[in-house]
Length: 82
Image (cartoon, rainbow, N blue to C red; front, side):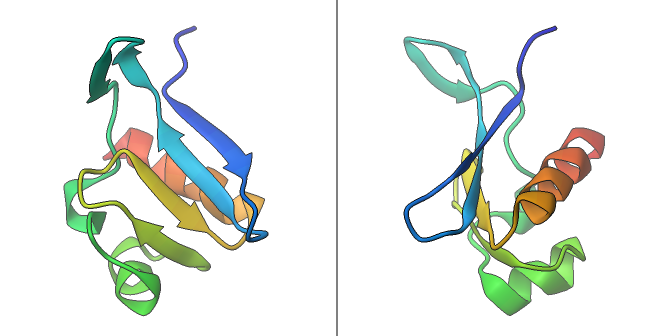
């Protein structure tokens, strides 16, 4: 099975979701986070995603953050369905 997302805790006690790159020398993601989440933070991201604890999604969709592991995992699951 090919990995699509990586979840990891960060130094701020939040959890990160990162889309895995197509290859080590290519910045394109295998499956970026949904377009309608990109560039959003906190309440705006909660409103659009429906996932509690969302902190942000980068404008390019390669990474995002959530306050809990469960929330980051739900972000990954929802992204796979998008």
